[in-house]
Length: 192
Image (cartoon, rainbow, N blue to C red; front, side):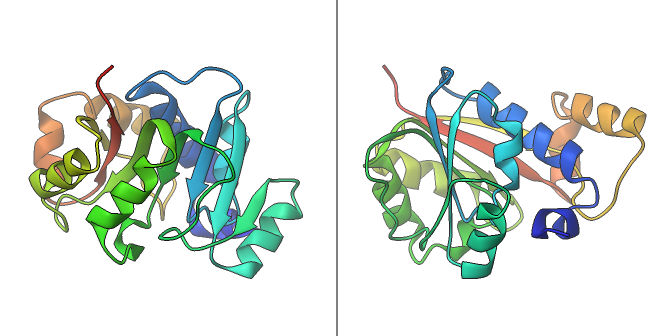
């Protein structure tokens, strides 16, 4: 069993919804674009980004080996320092923004090699959105699109309930739920 299968109660549904938001929020990605996934674990998101060139980066040698054994393009590296050999269209960083040594410096570093967007999750009970927006703006990301992400990680729900939660993400009631649980998926880009 892989890390993805043990970390998520319903990995397919959870990661498919995450990938849908990676593709749907912020600037449009084109087939063949490179998506760099920082702190990727074993690279489970790769399965849901068909048509894009996926590269995962994780600090754990075991995670990298696990992902490679499944044919995924993973390299070992620290999300704070890793720099891809060429610019990428999108960079993602999920369940790991708290691993940054300095969030503002991390955003500046990622802005240096990311051409279209940075997509990450954000717990609004842990970080103020206005502070994160200011750090992104200082790094050159002057557009920020937020979407509540109501996919539970640790338990599986019937499809009807999951679909209802996903529909709720687009309603005013979402702000109330975010006070107690769940997170945002954030897509930071630049004005063109």
